[in-house]
Structure formats: structure tokens, C-alpha cells
Length: 540
Image (tube, rainbow, N blue to C red; front, top):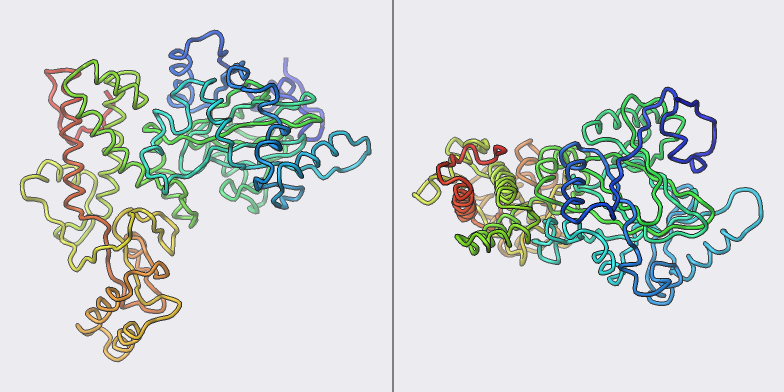
């Protein structure tokens, strides 16, 4: 029976009373009980919801005590004892931000929770706090390996430690604190486990299916008069307004032992409930499944709004492809060893492993194609790049980009475009003159450009200055796409030089090697089949 909404404050609602409201699109989030499934079943069923259907799911009744080492293991008291000096980011009313210690935060929580006074209270939310290593290890004892932070299916583990985005976080929320509507960065999948609560504290989640992301974005924009969007994470949409949404909103009241799993590109917001506080451990995971969403949806969107990518996705796909290729090649042709490699890489069998590997190769080759310069002076299309792989070890094709300087960076993948903020994978245009204190050689080059613009001398002078300045970090960098759009250094438009961190021919060879290994893996599934490179990423 449908019910009408009785006006309340956001934190006063429960999931039970919202689901089924007349005129709303609130639906209950699907639950899977931890104790009713073995690990393989839990992973298979939950993946079906978050990867196939693109809707959130919660694994309930996770045995928190299985990971806890002490009776008060997941409490504020434990944090105060073991990490007394840790800097804790705090969100206060009106989105005011501060940094406290756990002691200060704990004292504040206890004072507010025990207060009998009426009226507004200055509630605090410990938000995006680095998770203690002890809690990380404990959580891994509770949940399936597949969902571990930096686990078998998390491609972030293939990156050097310096490039990894540390996103294993702790959240300690008092009642009425909230996380505004947003999507997780770079198409990653979200994981959130409530490990503790006092005085009946819980968290009310509102989530939108992956395929309704654009509807949700328009809804947020319209309801706020264009003053807030999902990228700015600045608006918690009131529940009475969510009733007017023309798309399904999955509702969940998360309690201790509830493990929430979010698909890529899922809009969600959370409000904490109760008089006490709750403790959650949260992280994001980049898998082979979400890489196409990352490259095709999220990265173009981030470039459009000039938002930093944060997760080094291009480098991640590159290094993961190399890691997969090495692991698979070393296991061939031993089928038992191959099955072990499949599990190590988060795949249930060789067929799933082949699909994941093919997805990675496509992402890397697609990325390579955007920076490869063909004979006609243009970047190549993906189909052309795939065809290039077959001839990579036969003397062709040729990359026609000339005058490339070799980067002196000690580690690739660390630079970002100074215009759109995207990660620079390999090639970039660099202005060597944009430094705080320009040296004499740079001034000479600059003067020569002023006197003889367009002359053959200007590029020679600028190249000499670039070599002497050794690509200072303070120089201006532009990605290939921005330079192609006509963007350049405003101060020294004629001095932009192209640099690369690694030879593109060698990168093409790495891709060709990966495709060769993929072919062998693919054909081992069906000896009668022959794989065409152009069909590399078709689902089997």
C-alpha cells in the first residue's frame, strides 16, 4: 500500500517508510546475506548487480567480530589510544572545514551526544581520514578477497607506490552529518562497510543506477537552480525534493555489518542518523570492468570541467597490461598454473581472464592512438592503431612526429596538463621559459624570438634553452589534445617543444606483445578459433 510523505527533517526518515511512498521512485536496495552464501556465490551475485545491472547492492551481516582484535577495536577510544596525534579532517556545519586530533573530536562527540540542551548543535563529521593499517588488515579478514583494497581485482596495485591514490578512508559521523550527492572519482567502484555504531546510529543512503546518472545530474542542476552539480559535491538533495525524481532511487539504511557496493558512475548521497555516532571504512577500486567507463565517460568529463583525474588511470591501464601479460605468459601452457593466475588477477576462470586482459589492451591501444602521429600528420583512429599492432614487429608503421625531446623526469606519468588538468601519459608540449627565475640562456632564446619570430633560429634557441633548463617542474605543460585545439603558452607561444617519456615505437611493441599473449590465451579456450586483432575486445 502506497503512503504519503509526512514532512520531517532529512535525518528523521527511515528506509522502511520511504520505500513505497506514493508518487515517489524510492526502491529498496537489494540485500545479500553474508551467512547464506559462500564466498564464490557472494562475489558472483554481487558482481551481477553492480557490473551487469549497474545497480547498488549491500552484503548484510558481515561478521565484524571476525576481524576485530580487541573489544573496542573500531571505536573512537581505540583511535585516541593508538593514533593520538593523527591529523583528522573535520566537516562542521555550513561545510566549514577544520583539522583536529582524535582526542579533540572524541571529546566533541561525547559532549554533543550527552547534551540535554535544545536547539542546534555543532555536529562534526570526521571525513576522508586515512584508515589505520590495523583496520585495513581486519576488514580484509571479513570480506571476499575480490573486494579487497589493493586486492586481486584492484588495478591500482600495479602502479608504483608514489603514483597510487590512497583512498582507503575512515568516516566517523554523528547524527545529522552528511555527504552531498556525488559520483566517485574516475569511474571507480565504491565500497563502504559500517564497522561500529553507538546509541542506534545508522546511515541513510540514496543511490541512483549507473544508467540514470545523466538524469540525476540534470535533476540536481534543475533543483538547485544551476547553483550546484554532482562534480562540486556541494548539495545534499532534500528528501522531499527526491520524491519528484523521474528515475529510481535506491534507499538503504546501513547498520553495523552492512557492506555497500556501488557500480561505476553511481550518484549517491548519505546522511547519518541517531543520537550517537557510526564508524565506516570506505575505499574505491579500479577494475578491468570499469576501465571502459573511466576512459569513455569519466576522463572526457573531467577534462571538460578542468578537474584533476587523481587516479592516474592511463598509467594504471598501461602498467596493469604489462603485469597481466607477464603473469599470463609465465603460466603458459600449464593449465593449473593458468587457473592460479586467473584467481590471482581476480578472474574466476580463463575465459573471464581473457575478457579482462582484452579490455585492458583496448584501453591502452586507444590511449596510444591519441598520441601517435600518422604519415598525414594526424593522430590515428583506434581501428588503425589495432591494425598497426600486426605490423609492429615487421618494420612498420612509422610515427611521423619529429623533433621530439626525451623527458628527464625520473618517473613517467607524474605530470598534468596546465590547462585541462588531465594526466599526461607520455607526450606533452612544454614551455621551458615559464620558470620563476629565467636564466640567461632562456632570456637569450626569448629575445631571439621577439626579434625574429618564425625564423629557423627561434626553435633552435628554444631547444637549447630547454636542454639547459632541464625541464624544470615549473615549466608550462600542455597535453596533446589541448595543443591540438590551439592552446599554447600565453607568454611564449612560439617556444612550445614536444617531449616524451618513452619511445612510442617501443610502446607499440609492448602492445603487440600483449596482443600475441592474448591470442594464445584466447585460442587455448578453443583450439579451433583464430583471433583477429580487430575483434580484440568483442565479448565472448
